[in-house]
Length: 226
Image (cartoon, rainbow, N blue to C red; front, side, top):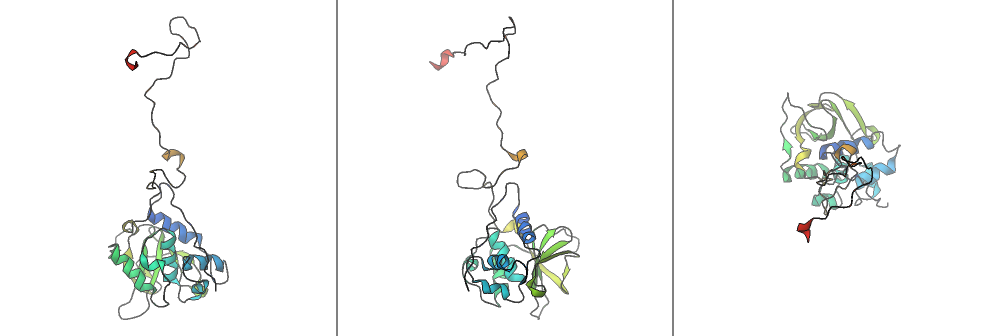
């Protein structure tokens, strides 16, 4: 099977890394082995693994790793082929490397784009999803037919497992749209975010305040500039 080009999700001005993760997940809701299979295969393959990776079961972790890659996460293990059964080891290593794992608390508001790691001690039943809309919107893979779905419910309990840790997107050093090489935004700024700079030179009056003449006066010659 062939290796498909990885999808591109450039940063958008004003968007946090967590919001970008949630945006990417939402873009694939409804995908499965039967619907938009090639799109899903391109995401989980990351431009590295061939499209057969889309058939791995369950696909919750391969999907989330594909989302992180599309969001711009820079991590060596995402740049080489994955091994079936070792995906969670990569995810754990990502959280450890960026010091991004957080211990859940019952009263907390887990942020948009956070990775939710569900785990039962002593059992190989780990599951991961992403927060899509706090306080209770979440979604990801690991469903029948490797479908990507979104739903609502208590984030501290998912797929019959308790929340073990969550991955803080603000700690992952994801690209910022304002931090390009030239200092200019990568994405299109919103109108309210467009940079403005007030002019230091007042505009000429539309008329002479003494004569009422509407003709503009000649330019002012500043002697100090000579």
